[in-house]
Amino acid sequence: MGKKELSPINAGSMADIAFLLLIFFLITTTMDVDTGLQRRLPRLPDEDQQEETSDKIKERNVFVVLINKHDELLVENKPMDIHQLRQNAREFIANPNNVENLPEKEIKELPFFGSVYITKNPVISLRNDRGTSYGMYLRVQNELVAAKQELRDEISILQFGEKFKDLTEDQSDAVKHYYPSVLSEAEPKNIGGK
Image (cartoon, rainbow, N blue to C red; front, side):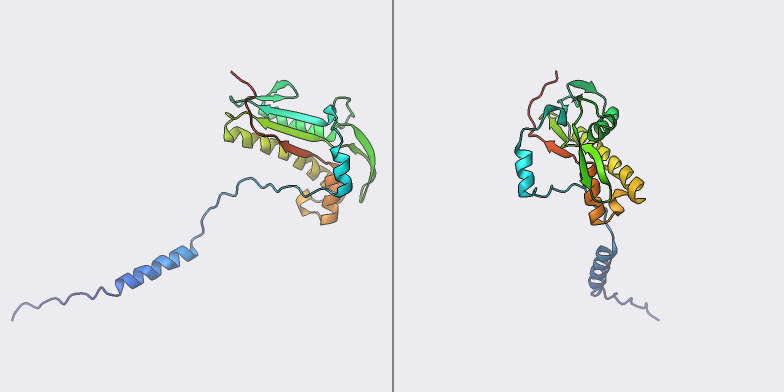
C-alpha cells in the first residue's frame, strides 16, 4: 500500500465568495455620519418687509457678541462667561420687563395669539476673531440658537401644548413672529485679545 496523495483544494471560487461577502457587509453596515449644525439659510423677505428692514436698526435692538482669539466673550461691551450667554440672549430676545436698553416692544396682532406685546426686530450680531477656535465658535452659536429655541418651545407649550418642532406650519409661523430674532454673523477679523 502506497501513500495516498492529497488532492489539491480547488480555491477558484474562494475569491468570488469573499467578494460577495464584502458586498453584503458593505450594504448591510450602517455608518455614523456627522451631521453638523442643523441650520438653514433664512428665506428671502417679502418686498414690503425689505423696505422696513432697510431702515437703520436701532442700537438697543442689537445684541453684540464678540469672540477674541483667546476664545473670550465680550457681550454688549462686557466680559461674559459662555454659561451666562444663553440666559442673556433669552432676556434680550423676549425683553420680558420692557427694559429701556433691550429691544423696543410693539403691540402686534398674531394668529392664534391675538393682540400681543412683543419685541420689534431683535438682532443678535456675532463676530469672531480670525484666531477664534472653531469649537468655541460652535459653542457660542449653539447657545444663541438654543436661547431662541427655548423661548419658542416655552410659548408653543403654553399656547398649543406641544413643542415648537411639533407644531403645524401656521402655528410655527405665528410663534416665529412672537419671538423673532435674526442671527447676523459678520466676517471674522482681528478684534483684540492679547
